[in-house]
Structure formats: structure tokens, C-alpha cells
Amino acid sequence: MLIRNVRIRERRHDVRLAGDRIAAIGRELPAVPGEPVFDGRGGAMLPGLHDHHIHLNATAAALASLHCGPPDIGTRAALAMALRGAPGEGWLRGIGYHQSIGAIDRGWLDRHGPGRPIRIQHRSGRMWILNSAAMAALELDGPPDGRLIDEDAVLRTRLRQTPPSLTGVGRMLARRGITGVTDATHRNGEEDHARLATAGLDQRILMMGDASLDHLRSAPGLVIGPVKFHFHDHDLPPLDSLAAAINQAHAAGRAVAAHCVTRAELALYLAALEEAGARRGDRIEHGGVIPPEFIRIVADLGLTVVSQPHFLVERGDAYRRDVDPNDLPCLYPLAALRRAGVPIAAGSDAPFGGSDPWSAMAAAVARPQGFGLDAGLDAEAALALFTGGADAPGGPPRIVRVGEVADLCVIDRDWAAARRDLATVQVRLTIVGGRPIYRSIESTNPHPSASDAGTRRIESAI
Image (cartoon, rainbow, N blue to C red; front, side, top):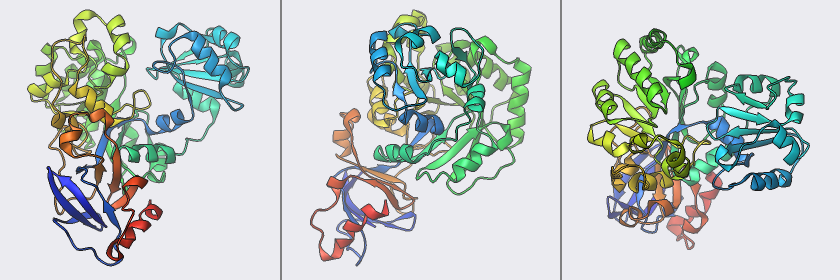
């Protein structure tokens, strides 16, 4: 494939791909007969983006779910209207509910929702709220308010549903220039590995999960990643148990990652790592609250923080209202971490956060007001949040050069323009391993010459 008229580090070039690699970069490269040609129209060619924290199955399910919270739904009256207007029959699945719109429970859903079974997930992902029809369908006697907390295993067993197709998720990611993802679901086990290996997702996958993945080998396009720990303030494991689990993961050759959104969760994890010893690749997921006194410990342990800067935009009002004012400057402190030498990267946490990496970059640059005096990142550092290697988030960003794997994206403007307004960037072309998985129709050369007539064949290759 020949990609004409793109900017690499602000210089205009043509780029030829051969197999899964970048074969040549130069000015006015001659087209080979039959070679597909894409006109980049002066847009920047960048390394393909990697979403370092996503939940693939949940994101796929969310695409077929009703959004039940901010910013789309701001009141219970609006939620009632949305529920009654939802099309279809059978189960109605809602996501994104937050108590800021008003409290809801089983009785409220019975009174204001349709008569079909309803289950609505809290924005945190930890709670489901069911109506009476749903409780009956699942043969559940309680709880009376219909609120199931940390009971996903019960729902999966009772629902007996097959995991959703990932086709829609792959297309959505491709439109945003994403060529790889890290599935950060802590429950991932052998069955999930087998399913992802055959899911047909165009993006490369690094898969976190439990200790049952220790003996499995990576498959093409699917790499085994860290052991993921997921605990909460109300149910923290004993320090010695967590340290032992970390030692077990390290002995199996795997790094560890832990969900840390509070001071208590982070303090426990850091203490366990100090006892067990940290190794390269150990991670903090989210880093929701990282006080200054913890940043030095994180740096000394050599940990990477994979965060969600866009949460300060998406959830800012709730944070300002609900979080201790002393903790507001400590929320997702990417610039402070970077100054301390801590490797930082970002992931969407979709479906619990927005899936657009360009909006996340914009949020990292323009840290919203009300969260301390710490400045945001510059645009290049924000881009680097998504261009580190899958197995080295926060490490040196991948670059576009001859011989590198052709995981690439071409955007609709040069980098000088993009860095001024990251949130509005659109992707024209996304390539994984030399193969185009997305291209915008308007970007195809509308008048191919005899030498670049292959342009018309790009669409059929996607």
C-alpha cells in the first residue's frame, strides 16, 4: 500500500507499506502497478493509538444499552421518559446511572419504567438496580430494593447469555485510530482467553486477568498481560494475602496491576508491593487519588500509572460535590506524576468512561478548574499517553520510521493544528499490521490515475 501526502514530524512524505512493516518513507515515491493508494491530504501520520485500559465485553454490551445518567440524562423524570421510550421487548439494559440525577431502586423502576425486565448499571460498574420483573426472571428473592452490589457473577449465571460480538467495538475503536487495546477485566480467565483469541477483533489485544492465565501462551494478536487485582475500601484483602498473590504472579513471570481509586486502596497496594517487591511492568490502574506523599513511593517502586484524565471532565461536577476538598488536587495528577519520573499512560475505562482517546488527550492538556493548581500536560505528552507499547505503557512512544510495524493512523490535519484542538481531531485512516481497518470515504483519492487505481480497492479490504 502507498500512502501519499502525509506529514511525519511536520515534513511531507509518502509512505509505502509492505507486509506488516513500513517499507519506505520519502518524497514522491513511485506507485507500483496494482498498489492501493491513499491520499493523506497533508494530515499527520502517527503511531496507532493503544487504549491501555478498556473492558471489551462490557463495551460491546454498552453499545446495545440505554444510557441512564449524565450527561445525557440529568433527572429522574428524563430517565423515566427514556425508559418508557426504549424500543424492543424482553430485557432492557441500562448503563451509566449516577445518583446525582436522583435515587432509584426496584420500586421506582416498577412505577416509572415499562413492564419488561430492567437492569440498570451504576456508573462505577459495581451496582445493578433491578425492577420486579427482572428479579422474577432471575428467580431472585432479594434484596428488596433491587440493588445488587458486586454481584456480576450472579447475574452472569442467572442470565445465561453468550458474550456479545466485538465487531461493533472494533469498528468504533478503528474510527478513532486505535490499533491496540488492553482488556483490564480482572475476571478474565481461560474461557475469556479462548473467546478473545477467536473474536476477530482487528486491534491487537493485551489481556489482563486472574492467575488461571499463568500457564497460557500468547496467541497471534493476543498477549497475556498482568494479573489484575480488584478490591474496594469496604472489603480490602489482608496485606500478607495480597503480598503473597503478588509474589505468585511475579513467580509466574507476570506483572501485576491493581484498581486504585481511593487513598486506602492505593496505600494497601503500595504496602504489599513494598513487602513483596515490585518488578518491571507493575501498574496502578486509575490512580484516582494519589496524594503528594504517595507519589515518591510510586516513583521509587518503579510503577506505571494508567489513568483516565477525561474523568475530570465527565465526572467533574460529582467530584467537586462529593470528594473531600483536600483530595481534589490529588485526582488523576498526571503532571505531578510525570515531574516525579513516574511513567504515565491512559486508557478509556470504557464503557465506564468515554471511549474517545482524543477527548482524553484534550482533558489531559486542559485540566479542568477546581482540581488544584497543577498544570495539564503538553499536547505531545498527552499523545504519548496512548502511543507507548502495549507491554510498556508510559515508556518511550512508538514512532513512524522504516522497519517499524505498520500500526498507524492518519488524521485530518497536521500535528501543529491538531495539538491546538485535540478534541476535534478526526481520523482518516487506521492500519494494523499493514492492513487498513478503517478509512474515511472522503479521504480516498477521488481521481486515481492508472498508477494508483488500486485506491478503489481499499474499501473492500476493510
